[in-house]
Amino acid sequence: MSQPPSQQPPQGGFGSPQDPHQQPPQAPQTPPVQPGRPPAAAPGYGTPQPPAGHPPVPPQTPPGPAYGAPQPPVGQPGQPPAAAPGYGYPQAPPGQPGYGYPQAPGQPPQPGPYGAQPGPYGQQPNPYGGHPGQPQYPGAPTPLPAGRSGPFKGKPAAVIGAAVAALLVIGCGTYLALSGDDTDPEKPDAKGGSSAAPNPTGSGDVDEGDGSGGGREANDDLNAGRKKGEAKVEWLNTNDVDLPRNGADVYGPWVVGDTVVKAMYKSVVGYSVTDGKKKWEVPFTTEVCAAPVEPSAAGTIVIGVNDTAGEKADCTVLQQIDLKTGKAGWKKPVPKGSGFSSLSEITLAISGNTVTASATNNSYGFSLADGSQLFGKPDSDCQPFAFAGGPKLIAAASCRTGDYDKSQHELSEVDPTTGKPKWTYKLPANWEVTKVFSVSPLVVSTENRETEKWSIIALTDAGKLRSTLDGGKDKFQPKCGGSFVVLAENLQGCVGVAADASTFYMSTVPTQLTNGTNDVVAFNLDTGKPKWRAPAGPQRTMTPLRMEGGDVLLYMEGSWDRGGAVATLAPTGGSPKVLLQHPASTAKIESDFYSPRYAYADGRFFIASGRVSARNDAEEKQTKTMMAFGK
Image 1: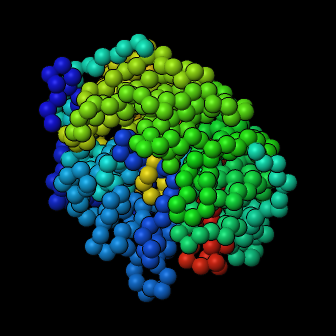
Image 2: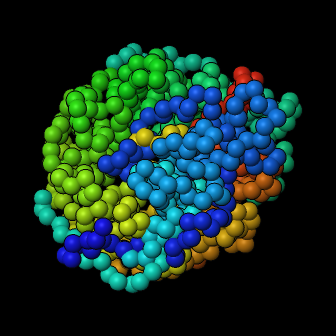
Image 3: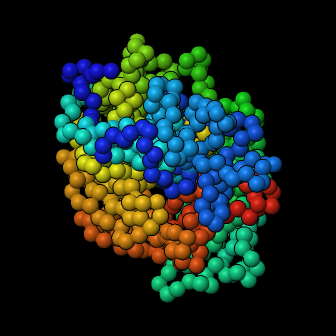
């Protein structure tokens, strides 16, 4: 569809368009992450189950499947696992890709419900070369369709690998390339505009590196092979939860003082950062179905749990928890609404003393302290479908246009106590908000499903267009954690990106699947142009996680025979400075975490599986779930 002459969309540009029939390079076989994209169902609103009889099957990485990866169907021991489309993507029944199910890697993109192009998002497939898929830092973090343009100035982007229809995904399963003409887009206008606390319970299986924990053979010291200069493995946890057949998604980890916390299935659990032993647990009768990317500065969080058990459950109940003590606070349902405003799945964000719960056509703000409703928009021409939290509260809204073929999105900074916008930025027609890479400064991923283009824009504190990033011919791979099945997803939670007041940092796609290398490219937020690029080094790849003391915090990927590392990169570029070099003796364990989620605090680095699943009870108890490294 052509654009109005006064509002040409931002042009993307990482690389040239790809032949949809050309086989894409294979992405690392680990679960991907996905950015959600309204108004279509966004990835991450809960975790529906895949078709009966087809449990998810993880990709095989020699010599065996990743710890915690979904297992092949029971009763078919001799059958090789099907290629997984991306981290955490369910498999479709033979001959039936099914709406919302990603395609297997290496296969030509399949037509989606919106036409003969793959869907843009999936919860770990991505547009920037493996859509923002995880967070994960969490997280989840999913991919863009072939032929999609990049996020930088009018450059057509190609996303390799199938994406989930109607959702923008950036993750490890796909790659986004941006390139094309250098025509500057016309700038859109901006206008002003409870339950009792549980008693501490005993610890699950923990290997503290002395052979006393579970998951490794007796007398097997995790630090026995540690070399001089390598970090110490402080502990390794194995699963102690009786999970459903298809496993469960993991939310977190969140580090609050001396406790590292994660939520999975029917509980939220706090572990000691020093030895990994369980400190407290908040149990539920129904499944955890949503969580914000980060808790409040004071360590308070509000998670979503299903209102009932079973397949017809809605993710509409809020539960407050103090992560420092493990005390459960207020609990209340979110108003569901009716008709097109009905709400069944939510995404959550926290800013100041406010937690927002939102979905397509519905959004609310509640007091983090007592759960009282602060604001809500049950019916509006421009309805927020998701919020990004942190130092500011940013709303992404979808507006009624009266035209089925035309979409209109807006971005606003809103007052956390009233929900009233301080300013509003209107995107060009058919351009949609897919991810918020940074709240302050505000850096946003946008996408045009009609023209298959992708663009990253930066806005000023007053809501004016600051720049549109120019990615040149590079391919990028933000990873945005997400759910096992694409439903709804937080706007935040991407790794592979970071930002300070003047610069946006993003990593390129590795040069090859194994033993490859990549760069971090720094973009000037005032001009959108690249400032410098820093190489990871021979046979190493690096993923920006966030800013740390003025530097870019990085995770250096490991391999089967080399441990990963935590490093920093100066805002002026140069070479990475290693803070923790993980031991080679535990490299296989480190590499095996399924759809890994990362956290770094006070000199410790935590890796947690993004999803836990197993074929039988014995294997379930041996599944590695979280690992900690320190000096």
